Length: 485
Image (cartoon, rainbow, N blue to C red; front, side, top):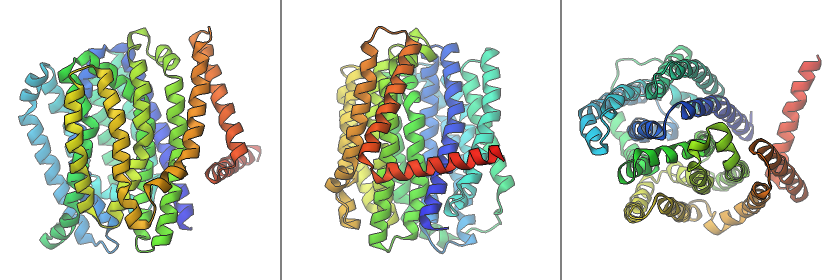
């Protein structure tokens, strides 16, 4: 199987995983939004943010160092396995110790208990980093998708039952723990690698020298991604955080999963051709164009249908989230571009530059966040949009030096897809000015969006669309052939 075929297959399975497992979580989120108040959703948002930041330390630079190391040995895997376990236990201990001060800071008495119980996920995650890393190295995203989907179905079913039984926020905590626990168990069942009692200081030092910079950069990136949960929860209110969290949960499953798919697939593939600059440049460009074809289209659609979607799915009490969702779709469009350009730095072994970038970006972000917090949540989100564009220009700066692919060349490649997305959003959003009920409105919007997408792309014949169309038609024909047989 060629590198391109592996990439397409891996991306397909990652998308399947995202659609099914995250789709189920999306449905659960809608159910919970109907059962819980904005204050309760905001409370869970704070817990999720703390766990996400801590998890970035476990899933950070050490596993990336293993993926990049072409001649990694069993000794390396064992060393990182025990290192991750130690990090997971230490982080959970810190979370327990500081849970009460965190609760006092946010003035939420239930928060410490939620953090202590929910934080168990950190220990669970630390047990499966190596198993997951090995599947990534082998580009086996099929097994990962099956595990994720099965875990989400079981955990989601239990969480829904708990929500209807009146467990409130604890149903979402249970969802996280059960899902992570089942994922860990299934990874151990399917895995062909098991740890032995080996720990090498030399191996740890070698991997850590490269990985610690990525780890710090990943931590800073995670802090950035979640800083708005901390800021909004304190500077405004848990209700405001609830509206923001709910809006973010409408776009994040799509932009984050596309970004995750791009990161998972591009890193091992680009690492395998890291010394062949022409091939590396071509493959990087392909990843970039495919990612914007998919992500720009989805983000434009979500922004356009945000009003009828929110009002139909979770009700009038969440109407405040509509405008927040539209604003969040803008930085959501850029997420895969950030991931690709940062992946390139790691692939070429420049973890020092990656860390330097993160330090510079966050030194800009923190004053911006503090300044905009003096005004309103809308101003905070406008600041987020401005920073997202600034971040892209900074992330793409080194791509020209590394593979001869400048920011201007990237923009030229991105521009056709951006123009189509803007046209699609404009046409779909215009439908909201018609005197229609919410259900007919969203159906008309989707019909307009699909029709415009097909007409424009059929006219322009962009290579990525043509190949995507061919793959889709091929899959459909195989499916119908099997059904007829």
